[in-house]
Image 1 (cartoon, rainbow, N blue to C red):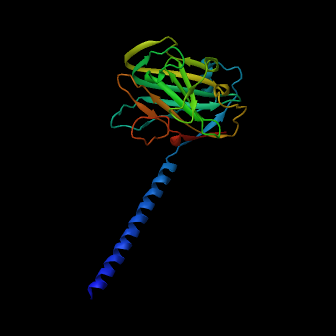
Image 2 (cartoon, helix red, strand yellow):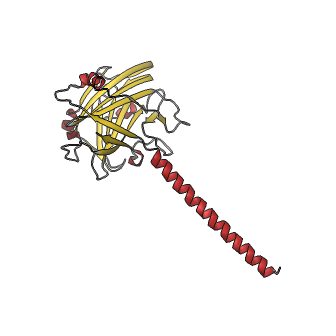
Image 3 (cartoon, rainbow, N blue to C red):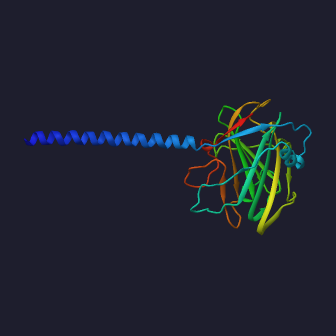
Length: 256
């Protein structure tokens, strides 16, 4: 066999190897995309009658309506923040509001912030993020263990606009720990918060009804400045560091 023939055969097989390698890369990308899509959780959200309901009566109503608790278990940054408190929520909706009840048990608890739109995420905090419209604007509703809330809106983490106090006053809150601020209490503590979130709090949208809609959102538990910081989510997040402002990792909320 001549040297030229050998060189031709080598080039041919090298080209085949490169083509196969490229196909393998495409296959890996496709599998990765399918995996991300398949990992997206879906929650069916029951509609219930909540006319005249007060926040302190919400847990009993959800019991009566057999709305089940859903665990929040994803520790997305386990190497640096492995702690997983016990957290669950249940979620329903009414003609003009979302109905949300969190139940938590954790190793310490703090409620330093008593005024709305403060840094409640540094306290013992639960959160609900949602995209109520089709424009990509999402809302972050964050609540510490005494019912102090923060509400923001925008299309990204650095573009948040806070709700007015008048808008937030429409959010009914109940906490099993009362409403007075306190510094960190070390020792296992169980607590609950219930929120009635009227659609009027979504101040960048005019929402008259969400009947039968499919939305995207996520539910979280955090405590950035607690003795043991932690960052949990309902739908998994695949970022390198803690970040809840990632609508691409929101799950699906099917309003029945």
